[in-house]
Image 1: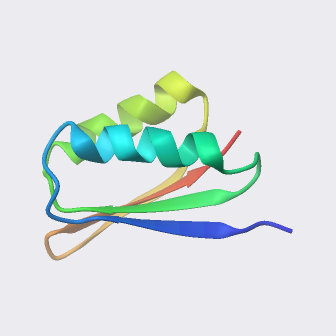
Image 2: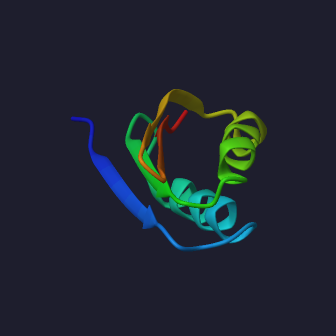
Amino acid sequence: MTETTTLNLRGLKCPLPALRARKALAKIPAGDVLVVECTDPLAELDIPNLVRETGDELEGRSRDGEVLVFRIRKA
């Protein structure tokens, strides 16, 4: 059964969103989903780069006003 964890990183500035997302990904089992919510515009570059480095899958990204939302599946 797949679980989804939401990580609220609103208000944090680079590099904290990517660092905290990396730490959260390390804690969840393979197949689970991490939803990362950020307001830092640099996260638009940092989170996809993080996912490329870790080998996980970026299932989607969206924007809700100032909030960037990334959906990452742990490999």
